[in-house]
Amino acid sequence: MESIFHEKQEGSLCAQHCLNNLLQGEYFSPVELSSIAHQLDEEERMRMAEGGVTSEDYRTFLQQPSGNMDDSGFFSIQVISSALKVWGLELILFNSPEYQRLRIDPINERSFICNYKEHWFTVRKLGKQWFNLNSLLTGPELISDTYLALFLAQLQQEGYSIFVVKGDLPDCEADQLLQMIKVQQMHRPKLIGEELAQLKEQSVLKADLERVLEAADGSGMLDEDEDDLQRALAISRQEVDIEDEEADLRRAIQLSMQGSSRSMSQDSPQTPSANLTSEELRKRREAYFEKQQQQQQEVDRPRQLSYPCERPTTSSGGRGNNQGDGVSEEDILRAAVNMSLETAKDNLKAERKK
Image 1 (cartoon, one colour):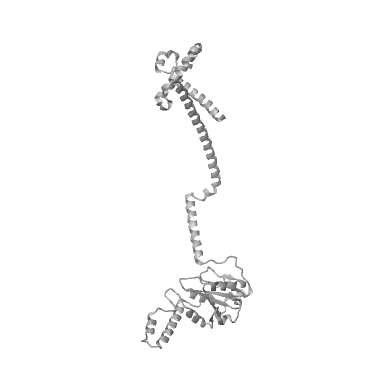
Image 2: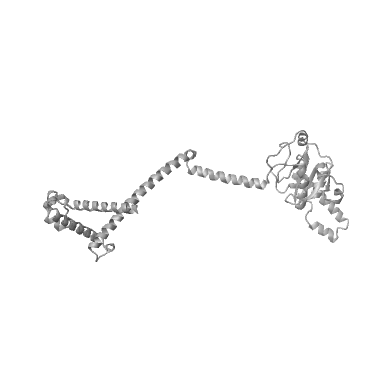
């Protein structure tokens, strides 16, 4: 469809685009159409002056703006009709009783000019196919013969005025080429506004992608995304395992402290362990271990004498009176930790069985 001439919308110059798309070339400019509009205004003024230049109607006419053009670029049907007369072409209203009585099938015509409010566009046959040459479209739109009548009827329902162009249109390259071949259209053209919106959206997406690439420090990182993801998952699994082990250890220590607290609570029921300070708790534990060691000393004194390091003395007075035994505070703490860990292991095993 590259051979088809199609002017796209610029400002409000749809009348110019309509005429040039109909004639398939740059036949009219805004200046030429303005000249025709001024000529029509002058002819109307002269007709009004026939009734007297001092009449109220004439003065009112002079005060009114032109009905054939305005500053936006709009031109009236009279301007379009006068422009086509230069080429020996005439406009007939499609839905007029005179034309309807002719009962002419639309596919047997050559072209139509359609108007709604202040917008004009052409529907023309080129070769053996029909095309919608609306300047608001991004390109010519192919219309099948079977769809043409429905298309025109739809326009009429939407409020369009349709004019049949009568006369011989000037020769054009597209018409000659399409007499020999038929074209197929895979994608219908969009409205210019829709295309601009789509281009704007694509521009925004492109800008977002560029920002992502900059944040990712180049495309190389994107190429290694899968490997990085696998490594991250492996590290995450390791961290979860470590966190599970740490949670188990914390739980064991907590259970150990609970077990020790229960033991001390039995020995000293008058003071709950939850209300003890760390110093009081340490002293209670030392007293508990000292009592345990004294009981073992009474039962197995020969073994304690053979292995003096196994008998911890917890109180500071005990350490001063029994320095010959070689028992230090480190031995006491080691024994306490061992007992706590043994208790924790037993409590953890019991809880897991539950």
